[in-house]
Length: 357
Ligand code: ASP
Image (cartoon, rainbow, N blue to C red; front, top):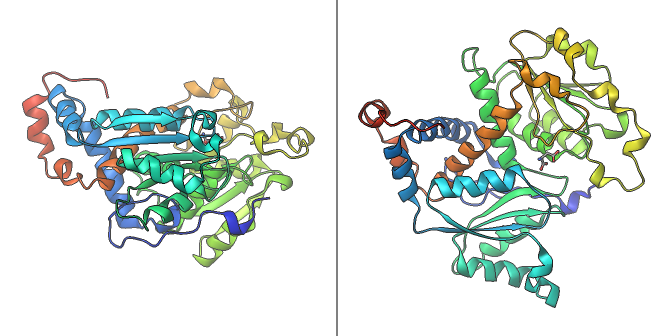
């Protein structure tokens, strides 16, 4: 069980729609979320032409980012890395702590301060919760602070995943009134799944959203998140019976069992087959509902689902890179360079050489 004390603490909102550190999803407000979603779509549109790709490439050529990833990552690492490259940001990385001076006994603070001497942004994934917040607090005390992005902190939070999840929901429901009023199911290991924990924190920004937690009792959503939902008046239900709730869901967010956090073989003790989606479950889901998954998947998501038009997870994965481009633009205050473009005339002018995007 994660102790409250070492969880990410909310970093005070910068006010308005500015972004610096990205640590805790609770500071994100609707205006900023809407702006990020629009910016993500604008960036994708611009990136469709060579001229647009070149324009993006030159926006942050003078910036460098560093990845400090001491916990495994495929999607978050690659999507952030490629998001940096889309904007011309050069990147360096430490993915194996045994190759850094931390093994010589250098303190966490000195290591982070050292990283910040060489780069303009630190993107961190850590095994323990609270580390990115600690790094951000340190940055706020030094003369040349650089922004810190939490790219996954233990089993606690994953704020940029939540942003790309919001973008995916927002896009999927764009013809049906957006996220407001939707019934969203979250299934799997909700206790230790940082993606669903972070996504719950963003739900306060949407009106009349109902959450349905579908999990075995042992892996139910934790009380800190439930208290947050109660405080913000977001209704939620808990069940172990997927079949009973499936027909009413607008979105089903499936997650895998987080067995890497097992202390005493908790996962093998539970029958997870009831918390999985295959062709049988597809028949019970509304025709216009969507299925999401942060990936990687395990047996909870049958590959046969991939062919169904409601399967949104591969698009969700790709959305991640573009949302992270938008986050980088906001952090470095370059968003107006895209927002102020007349996209229609830009596309008309340069659309003759489309790129796949
Ligand atoms: N990739 C996501 C994460 O880093 C989901 C998962 O691993 O289950 O949390």
